[in-house]
Length: 351
Image (cartoon, rainbow, N blue to C red):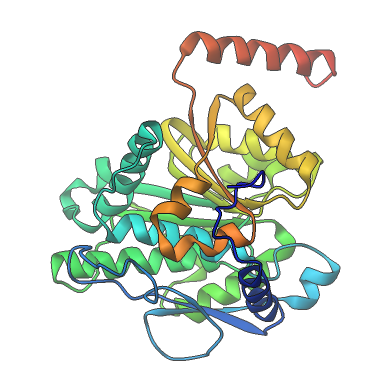
């Protein structure tokens, strides 16, 4: 292994092939993600390779999520118009957890949190409708962009539940919430209608039913998170799993992102951010500031690459998988909170 973290069998040609593939995907009008779950309870000697892969073909396969990209918007107005490489990596990782049994690893702490994450995901496939009031899991994606991660994960959960219970998916004991800023919302809504034509956009925007719909598309600006969460009916500290891909690209958005995550999280919440270091200063700030908002952060990238072949392409692209969990030490959390409050008061944010 060299100083970059790459293994001895690193092949530079792999970098070129992977980069060229994702360059083509980024410039395609539409991209898709094929969802195909194993029916053998995860006993697949070949792992997950070939079962869930990025693909540009437009088909009517109901196991395929088709995403229309906003290439012009991505070039001129915002970063949410194309599907970034990290979206495919995060989806492959989540799918591996859903499909495959517990894997041995030398990183005990990572494994414990990963098993909790797996239980969050797999339990949605077996819950009985009568438990919905106490057991329904909430997954929220920050910076959803075109919607590839959120829509694909929702489809994976639908297929897993149908497979486990042998029934048409009517009751869905999960809620997947896709969020974005206002300037990206039009394309995100169109992709919702394209892949879930039976979902009413009214219900995805204003959850007035009880329980709320299993799929929601909401505006969420990290600088207005309280207002937007209230508008969408998202309660504070109500999210079990927070996901995000390439959401760290500017220093000025790092703390608003962490503030939003803190507002959404409870003490058992897990957050997974899949990133490329597009802005090294922003990435470094995220790692150093996370503790001020009550999070412990672990880089689980190498652990994931070593165990899941379908995720190995992320190593060639130097992608990072960061796992956020609540800081377990109450005294440390209190000190961090007091430190943050003191700093905000000094800067004039608080009276």
